[in-house]
Image (cartoon, rainbow, N blue to C red; front, side, top):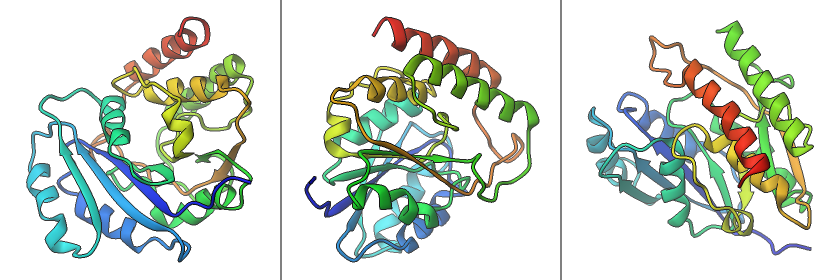
Length: 241
Protein backbone atom coordinates (compact mmCIF):
# COMPACT_ATOMS: atom_id res chain seq x y z
CA UNK A 1 0.00 0.00 0.00
CA UNK A 2 1.24 3.52 -0.82
CA UNK A 3 2.24 5.88 1.98
CA UNK A 4 -0.62 7.92 3.42
CA UNK A 5 -0.51 11.45 1.90
CA UNK A 6 -0.20 14.34 4.33
CA UNK A 7 -0.03 17.46 2.15
CA UNK A 8 -1.79 18.68 -0.98
CA UNK A 9 0.13 21.09 -3.24
CA UNK A 10 -2.19 23.19 -5.42
CA UNK A 11 -0.30 24.67 -8.38
CA UNK A 12 -1.96 27.66 -10.04
CA UNK A 13 -0.57 29.17 -13.27
CA UNK A 14 -1.68 32.82 -13.43
CA UNK A 15 -1.69 35.23 -16.35
CA UNK A 16 -3.68 38.49 -16.28
CA UNK A 17 -6.20 37.25 -13.72
CA UNK A 18 -6.33 40.32 -11.45
CA UNK A 19 -10.15 40.21 -11.49
CA UNK A 20 -10.40 36.59 -10.36
CA UNK A 21 -7.33 35.57 -8.35
CA UNK A 22 -8.59 36.68 -4.91
CA UNK A 23 -11.96 35.01 -5.46
CA UNK A 24 -10.22 31.86 -6.64
CA UNK A 25 -7.89 31.69 -3.63
CA UNK A 26 -10.83 32.17 -1.27
CA UNK A 27 -12.58 29.21 -2.91
CA UNK A 28 -9.42 27.09 -2.80
CA UNK A 29 -9.06 27.71 0.93
CA UNK A 30 -12.76 27.04 1.53
CA UNK A 31 -12.63 23.67 -0.24
CA UNK A 32 -13.12 20.79 2.16
CA UNK A 33 -10.21 18.40 2.61
CA UNK A 34 -9.72 15.42 4.92
CA UNK A 35 -8.46 16.58 8.34
CA UNK A 36 -5.22 14.65 7.81
CA UNK A 37 -4.39 16.63 4.66
CA UNK A 38 -2.86 20.11 4.83
CA UNK A 39 -2.56 22.35 1.78
CA UNK A 40 -0.04 24.66 0.19
CA UNK A 41 -0.86 27.04 -2.66
CA UNK A 42 1.77 27.71 -5.32
CA UNK A 43 0.98 30.60 -7.67
CA UNK A 44 3.20 31.16 -10.71
CA UNK A 45 2.63 34.54 -12.35
CA UNK A 46 3.49 34.18 -16.03
CA UNK A 47 4.65 37.80 -16.41
CA UNK A 48 1.16 39.30 -16.24
CA UNK A 49 0.63 42.75 -17.76
CA UNK A 50 -2.29 43.80 -15.54
CA UNK A 51 -2.28 44.20 -11.73
CA UNK A 52 -2.04 40.46 -11.02
CA UNK A 53 1.39 40.90 -9.40
CA UNK A 54 -0.04 43.37 -6.87
CA UNK A 55 -3.01 41.11 -6.18
CA UNK A 56 -0.69 38.18 -5.46
CA UNK A 57 1.35 40.31 -3.06
CA UNK A 58 -1.81 40.89 -1.01
CA UNK A 59 -2.52 37.19 -0.42
CA UNK A 60 -0.68 36.76 2.95
CA UNK A 61 -2.53 39.78 4.36
CA UNK A 62 -5.95 38.73 3.04
CA UNK A 63 -5.57 35.07 3.99
CA UNK A 64 -3.38 34.93 7.11
CA UNK A 65 -2.19 31.50 8.15
CA UNK A 66 -2.40 29.98 4.67
CA UNK A 67 0.74 28.47 3.15
CA UNK A 68 1.60 30.43 -0.02
CA UNK A 69 4.43 30.24 -2.49
CA UNK A 70 4.38 32.98 -5.15
CA UNK A 71 6.77 33.04 -8.09
CA UNK A 72 6.97 35.75 -10.75
CA UNK A 73 8.38 34.74 -14.12
CA UNK A 74 10.54 37.42 -15.83
CA UNK A 75 9.07 36.65 -19.28
CA UNK A 76 5.77 35.22 -20.46
CA UNK A 77 6.22 31.62 -21.63
CA UNK A 78 2.84 29.93 -21.28
CA UNK A 79 0.84 27.60 -19.03
CA UNK A 80 3.09 24.58 -19.43
CA UNK A 81 6.22 26.54 -18.48
CA UNK A 82 4.43 28.08 -15.48
CA UNK A 83 3.34 24.63 -14.28
CA UNK A 84 6.84 23.25 -14.76
CA UNK A 85 8.22 26.01 -12.55
CA UNK A 86 5.46 25.48 -10.00
CA UNK A 87 6.12 21.74 -9.79
CA UNK A 88 9.69 22.50 -8.74
CA UNK A 89 8.37 24.29 -5.64
CA UNK A 90 6.05 21.49 -4.52
CA UNK A 91 6.55 19.98 -1.06
CA UNK A 92 3.33 17.94 -0.87
CA UNK A 93 2.58 14.26 -1.45
CA UNK A 94 -0.22 15.05 -3.93
CA UNK A 95 -0.17 17.72 -6.64
CA UNK A 96 -3.35 19.27 -8.06
CA UNK A 97 -3.52 21.71 -10.99
CA UNK A 98 -5.94 24.63 -10.62
CA UNK A 99 -6.63 27.35 -13.20
CA UNK A 100 -7.04 30.91 -11.90
CA UNK A 101 -10.05 31.91 -14.02
CA UNK A 102 -12.96 30.47 -11.94
CA UNK A 103 -13.95 27.99 -14.67
CA UNK A 104 -13.36 25.08 -12.28
CA UNK A 105 -14.82 24.73 -8.78
CA UNK A 106 -12.50 23.77 -5.87
CA UNK A 107 -15.51 22.15 -4.20
CA UNK A 108 -14.68 19.22 -6.49
CA UNK A 109 -11.34 18.63 -4.72
CA UNK A 110 -12.74 15.91 -2.46
CA UNK A 111 -13.98 13.74 -5.33
CA UNK A 112 -10.72 14.31 -7.24
CA UNK A 113 -8.65 13.28 -4.23
CA UNK A 114 -10.70 10.30 -3.07
CA UNK A 115 -9.26 7.69 -5.51
CA UNK A 116 -5.71 8.60 -4.40
CA UNK A 117 -6.54 8.82 -0.70
CA UNK A 118 -8.23 5.40 -0.93
CA UNK A 119 -5.07 4.07 -2.63
CA UNK A 120 -6.94 3.20 -5.82
CA UNK A 121 -5.17 5.67 -8.11
CA UNK A 122 -1.84 7.29 -8.87
CA UNK A 123 -3.33 9.90 -11.23
CA UNK A 124 -6.84 11.37 -11.37
CA UNK A 125 -8.33 13.38 -14.25
CA UNK A 126 -11.46 15.45 -13.99
CA UNK A 127 -13.98 15.34 -16.82
CA UNK A 128 -16.41 18.01 -17.99
CA UNK A 129 -18.34 15.46 -20.02
CA UNK A 130 -19.59 12.82 -17.60
CA UNK A 131 -22.65 14.30 -15.95
CA UNK A 132 -21.72 17.29 -13.80
CA UNK A 133 -23.16 20.82 -14.33
CA UNK A 134 -21.49 22.91 -17.01
CA UNK A 135 -22.10 26.25 -18.64
CA UNK A 136 -23.41 26.03 -22.21
CA UNK A 137 -20.98 27.83 -24.53
CA UNK A 138 -19.16 26.90 -27.75
CA UNK A 139 -20.24 23.86 -29.77
CA UNK A 140 -17.03 23.69 -31.81
CA UNK A 141 -14.88 23.87 -28.66
CA UNK A 142 -16.64 20.74 -27.40
CA UNK A 143 -16.14 19.01 -30.74
CA UNK A 144 -12.47 20.02 -30.74
CA UNK A 145 -11.95 18.75 -27.20
CA UNK A 146 -13.51 15.40 -28.05
CA UNK A 147 -11.43 15.03 -31.23
CA UNK A 148 -8.22 15.80 -29.33
CA UNK A 149 -9.19 13.34 -26.58
CA UNK A 150 -9.97 10.66 -29.17
CA UNK A 151 -6.64 11.18 -30.93
CA UNK A 152 -4.81 11.16 -27.60
CA UNK A 153 -6.57 7.96 -26.56
CA UNK A 154 -5.64 6.30 -29.85
CA UNK A 155 -1.99 7.11 -29.20
CA UNK A 156 -1.93 6.23 -25.48
CA UNK A 157 -4.47 3.38 -25.34
CA UNK A 158 -6.27 5.17 -22.50
CA UNK A 159 -10.05 5.67 -22.44
CA UNK A 160 -10.28 9.21 -21.10
CA UNK A 161 -13.30 11.39 -21.90
CA UNK A 162 -11.58 14.78 -21.37
CA UNK A 163 -7.82 14.86 -21.92
CA UNK A 164 -7.77 18.68 -22.11
CA UNK A 165 -9.36 19.22 -18.68
CA UNK A 166 -7.55 21.50 -16.21
CA UNK A 167 -8.14 19.31 -13.16
CA UNK A 168 -5.37 16.74 -13.05
CA UNK A 169 -4.09 15.27 -9.78
CA UNK A 170 -0.86 13.31 -9.35
CA UNK A 171 1.03 11.55 -6.64
CA UNK A 172 4.26 13.52 -6.34
CA UNK A 173 6.52 10.59 -7.36
CA UNK A 174 4.62 10.39 -10.66
CA UNK A 175 5.43 14.00 -11.54
CA UNK A 176 9.03 13.43 -10.54
CA UNK A 177 9.26 10.95 -13.43
CA UNK A 178 7.83 13.35 -16.05
CA UNK A 179 9.96 15.99 -17.78
CA UNK A 180 7.67 18.70 -19.18
CA UNK A 181 8.86 20.29 -22.41
CA UNK A 182 5.80 22.12 -23.80
CA UNK A 183 5.52 25.73 -22.72
CA UNK A 184 1.90 26.49 -23.62
CA UNK A 185 -1.31 24.47 -23.72
CA UNK A 186 0.55 21.50 -25.17
CA UNK A 187 1.12 20.53 -21.54
CA UNK A 188 -2.17 18.60 -21.48
CA UNK A 189 -1.45 16.09 -24.27
CA UNK A 190 2.22 15.91 -23.30
CA UNK A 191 1.68 14.93 -19.69
CA UNK A 192 -1.05 12.49 -20.74
CA UNK A 193 1.27 10.80 -23.23
CA UNK A 194 4.07 10.55 -20.71
CA UNK A 195 2.06 9.12 -17.82
CA UNK A 196 0.67 6.53 -20.23
CA UNK A 197 4.24 5.38 -20.97
CA UNK A 198 5.33 4.98 -17.35
CA UNK A 199 5.94 1.39 -16.36
CA UNK A 200 4.77 -0.39 -14.35
CA UNK A 201 1.48 0.99 -15.64
CA UNK A 202 -0.07 3.70 -13.47
CA UNK A 203 -3.55 3.51 -12.00
CA UNK A 204 -5.49 6.34 -13.66
CA UNK A 205 -9.01 7.38 -12.61
CA UNK A 206 -11.45 9.92 -14.02
CA UNK A 207 -14.23 11.74 -12.12
CA UNK A 208 -16.88 14.23 -13.25
CA UNK A 209 -16.31 17.90 -12.39
CA UNK A 210 -18.41 21.01 -12.78
CA UNK A 211 -17.39 23.50 -15.45
CA UNK A 212 -18.25 27.20 -15.57
CA UNK A 213 -16.57 28.20 -18.81
CA UNK A 214 -15.74 31.75 -19.82
CA UNK A 215 -16.45 33.42 -23.14
CA UNK A 216 -13.70 35.22 -25.05
CA UNK A 217 -15.28 38.50 -23.96
CA UNK A 218 -14.77 37.38 -20.36
CA UNK A 219 -11.09 36.58 -20.89
CA UNK A 220 -10.85 33.05 -22.30
CA UNK A 221 -7.35 32.59 -23.77
CA UNK A 222 -7.15 29.25 -25.58
CA UNK A 223 -7.83 29.41 -29.35
CA UNK A 224 -8.28 27.09 -32.33
CA UNK A 225 -4.57 27.49 -33.06
CA UNK A 226 -3.76 25.84 -29.72
CA UNK A 227 -5.96 22.94 -30.82
CA UNK A 228 -3.96 22.51 -34.01
CA UNK A 229 -0.72 22.59 -32.03
CA UNK A 230 -2.17 19.98 -29.66
CA UNK A 231 -2.60 17.56 -32.57
CA UNK A 232 1.10 17.81 -33.43
CA UNK A 233 1.97 17.51 -29.72
CA UNK A 234 0.00 14.26 -29.41
CA UNK A 235 1.78 12.78 -32.41
CA UNK A 236 5.17 14.07 -31.28
CA UNK A 237 5.05 12.51 -27.84
CA UNK A 238 3.61 9.26 -29.16
CA UNK A 239 6.35 8.59 -31.68
CA UNK A 240 9.35 10.81 -30.85
CA UNK A 241 9.79 11.78 -27.20
